Length: 499
Image (cartoon, rainbow, N blue to C red; front, top):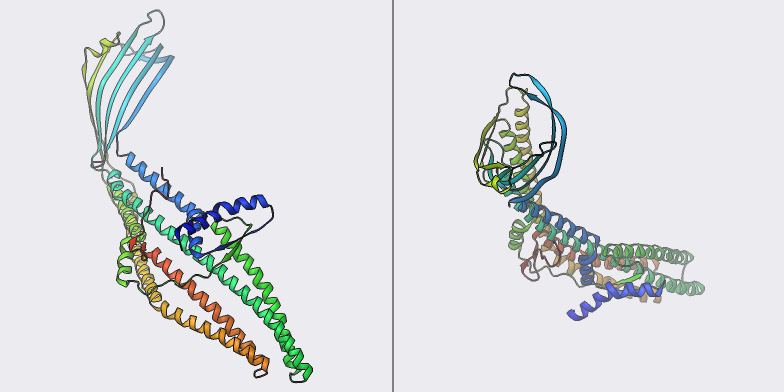
């Protein structure tokens, strides 16, 4: 199909038809919709396609949040101002406590730079702050407390390090989401193919029902003439009458099914309900030149299932390591160095600085927890073993599904050829049977049998066309590979606006 004509037709479907519908009220517009156009519309505006895009955006921003957590975090904090008029206890030199009145206003401002250390699991902080306190009352004295810089380091010594595991898991999780988006879009193609051929087969059944009713009426008219001449029995005449009634009922059923299948296709593609779709019978999809070795290679290399396996195993291993570390003593090291000064004048509070040094080691040792920590560890180990078993089973199932798909693809060209030949022969046989019945060479049972064979052969052929396209897009879904153009199916950021 010429690309310019294709774009023009697609534009008419997406833009002009809804506009025409709005202008013409209840009028219905008819569009001849090919499979390629239906696939393009499904990728552009189906609800499944929009859901896939939103899922990818969620994964993108989750990954962006993870990446942002690796960079320094800068914040400005302050209190402007804080008034304190209260009583508080004060111990005098003789050891006696006395309540004294507080009456002051404070203002403080600090800038903090915080940096996580992924390799150790610690946190590094750099702070610079200034505080002013004004005593209220008769003295009305004010002073400044400055901390030009203070560098602190908080480091758990034996604890579980979440940053280490995030570095392992999050990039794989995001890559899996990107591959999953491509796979989900191929699943949109699969659903579109299914809806399209459901409608196409329904249209074929309707066309067959119309033809069968016309033929039944014609045969019934011929039978009446033969009955008048005494060359057709009453039983055969009644049989033809029943066939005509059944053909009329079959047409009603076919029209109802045709309407339902058209609605399903329109609904999935996001087209207006006033659009009347006329499906076009596509050619069979050629599957004869598929490289079987390439199918296996691409299935293992590209399918998001293997990224999912890796994420699940890493998460289970992370939980096991976390539970194991929680059984150890909790030891943390906190160190801070810097400088500080104080004066009633702002600039002088930065002049005569003194050292600021803080160091402490925190310790928490579990003594008795009635086996809770051990139980958590054994639970995590069992869950890891369960994940391993499930991954192994799912991988075997995936291999078997690929093997089955390859077998179906290998058999499909010959099956399609057989059903196409059967359809051609059945159509010709029915034409000959009609002529023979008119001449009186065959009876009612023979003509009915020929009609049934003709209808079944046409439906079987269309079904094989559907299977050829379904197998092709299933192949793309499994391998994320475009066998027509010889390249991997990749995520295109121009298609989905992530930012």
